Image 1 (cartoon, rainbow, N blue to C red):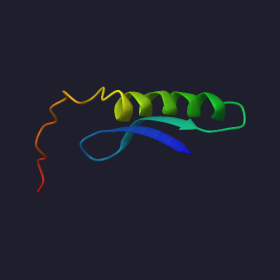
Image 2 (spheres, one colour; image 1 turned 45 degrees about the horizontal axis):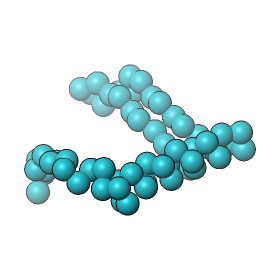
Image 3 (cartoon, rainbow, N blue to C red; image 1 turned 180 degrees about the vertical axis):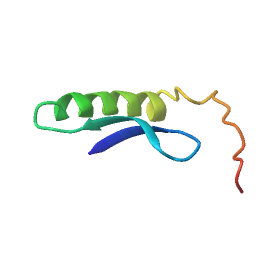
Amino acid sequence: MLLYHIWSDAEGMCKKLNLLVATNHNIAGIEKSLMHTAKQVFEDKALEGLKLPDPWIK
């Protein structure tokens, strides 16, 4: 599993990179966090009232 967030400038050059790489030391914590978030989103309907913007590209 690899989670990432990339910040880039107008030319597409990477300015900042945040990586979360699963290892034997942190995989249990990552899985626990993902299960908690998934339960909130899918079972508790935490995002039900969220209005997402229309996509810019169709």
